[in-house]
Length: 112
Image 1 (cartoon, helix red, strand yellow):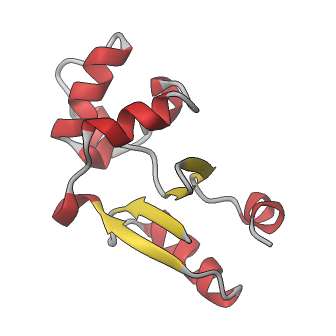
Image 2 (image 1 turned 45 degrees about the vertical axis):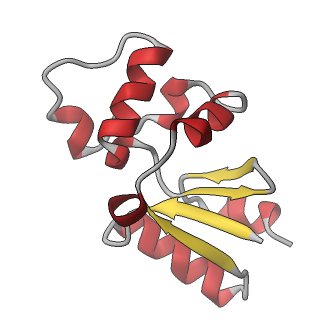
C-alpha cells in the first residue's frame, strides 16, 4: 500500500491524485495539515533523499521564510514546524520513497 504525503489543496497534489485514481492505484492520504509529520518519518526520508531535495524551494512557504535552513538539522526543524515546506506529493511504500513531486512520465514507470 502506498502512502501519499501532502496537503489536499495543492494543485500538483490534485493532479497526482487524479492520475493515481485514473490508473486504479490505491493509496492512503496523509494530510500534513491535519496529521502533521514526525521526526522519525523525516529522518527515514533523509536516508533516501537530501534535505535539499525534500524541501520545496519554489513554494510560498519557503519564499516567505525570513531565515532559511543551512543544514540538515535546521531543515528538519523547519519541516516539523511547517510541513507545507516539504516537496509534494511524496509517495512512500514500505518505508521507501517511490515518488517525489508529480511528473506523469515518471509515474508511468514507477507504478505498475
